[in-house]
Amino acid sequence: MWKNKVWNLTLLSTILRRRTTLLSISHFQSNSTSHFPPAISRTSNFDFLGNSNFPGKTFCSESAEKSHVHVRCWSCGNVANGSLFLFCDSCRSVQPLDQSVDYFQIFGLERKYDIGVENLEGKYKDWQKKLHPDLVHSKSEKERGFAAEQSARVIDAYRTLSKPLLRAIYIMRLEGVDVDEEETLSDPELLSEILEIREAVEEAADSRELNQIQSQMQEKLDHWSNSFANAFQCRKFEEALNSIRRMTYYQRVNEEIVKKL
Image (cartoon, rainbow, N blue to C red; front, side, top):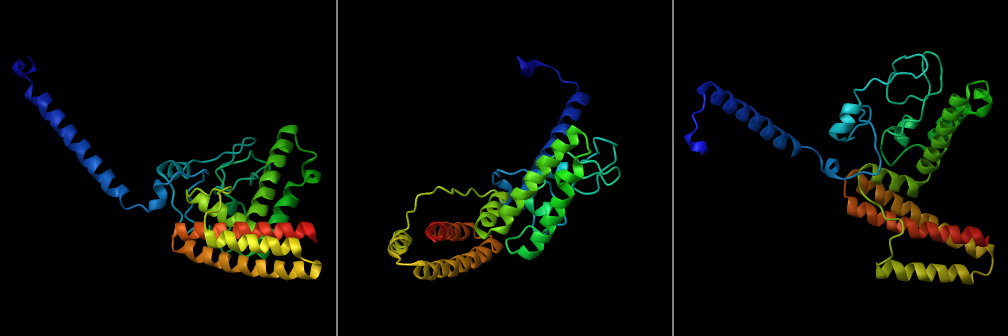
């Protein structure tokens, strides 16, 4: 029986010291974790690098480790300065697509809902000029492939961030909050309102009436966009999701009107 075994006192002392150290580390980790914001515990559909240039940004330990990884140019071996690495600063070689760079980082924007769309367009055009096929036609087939992938991602990033509803959905997902875009409408009040609006669209006699309804929808979209911005800033994610639901249905009405105009 183990009770009858004689333990070496030195070995026992060592074991006890190791256990004490492990317990201390475990206690420290459990206490440290409790101080992180709730967003860290959520599961995100997007993988992104931690970057101190974006206030209020939270990231998991894996992302934190990635932020310290030095990215080297595949062509000349130069170390990249920063996480946005579409081109090598040294040899100007086009780099492989980095999925860890989120859409806000692509345009050098702070991760927030309220952004200057006019500034976004200018930066988008700058990136597209640099990635245009005419400018990379002399590159190797490998680099042309990289440029095509980078260009497609920049286009997707611009389309997403330039539209309030898509931007709201995207930024919520970056926070790890799932947004069901196909969610069935369950709010009786909103359902009744949407049915009345769609009936009005169907019965509209001419483009003037359709334009009036469209103007009303835009006012509602602006109102709920502001509501989302306030809720998101205060991290009231349930209220933010409710604003997204409203925006989704008003946007769909707008799309129906455009088809009829």
